[in-house]
Image 1 (tube, rainbow, N blue to C red):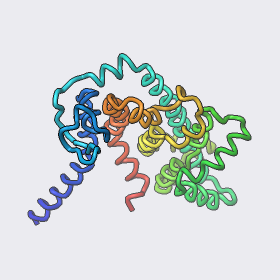
Image 2: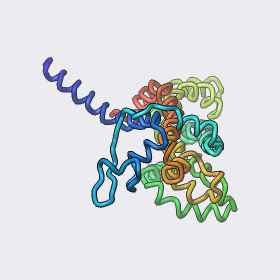
Image 3: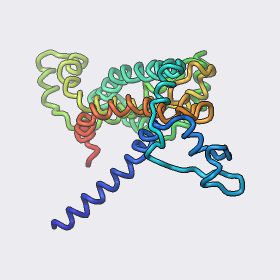
Image 4: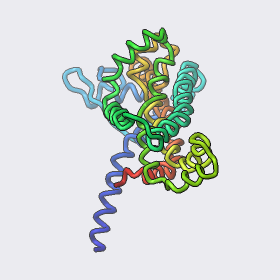
Length: 290
């Protein structure tokens, strides 16, 4: 039995190391100077990289975790010489914050209505929710683009925010937890004269905090990394979110790409660190473990 635990622990640690390697690689390379980055990763033959890892006028990438000369040049350029980064950061916040706040209000209400209020065709609608949830995002971009034209909100953050506000993942997770919610509590509230909304606000909603917190963590990751919607709906470069800016930095300013990646990673890392307990508890309570 002990040997089995050793093998299991070894596999887990190896899997964790593989998963963490890109983060470690990016963090280590963020302390390289711009010249070293170009010398290491540029496919072109340059005076600084012509000696090694070259063949037929092609320079091959030299991966490394230890900088030749550690420096904070990338961070200095990012924080002091790149005002575009700060603007793109707040563009991302302007997209993510309304989605999280809206889902926090709408998803529990919709799930409560689907689970506890009797009305015709609710199961058919919920099945449609699940189908939409399983569809790739790219598949919904065309109808979203058409509807955004009808609403005259193309080239606006609303074209990204409105579909995300009604993403079915939240309704699905919350309803899964409501299936195991004690019906006696709601019946007792009804006997005391509470209506459906009062029962929801005073009895049901306070017990959904864990699954809602888990939902917010998942939605933050999804909307912080939004790319396709921003490319389609946001025309002006200065209004793009940080996720789109990150892709442009690779070609426009490769000398500080790794520092930009580190700062892009920090908000998501903090959200997952502070929300990991809620994420685990919320998913467990939603019944997905079964």
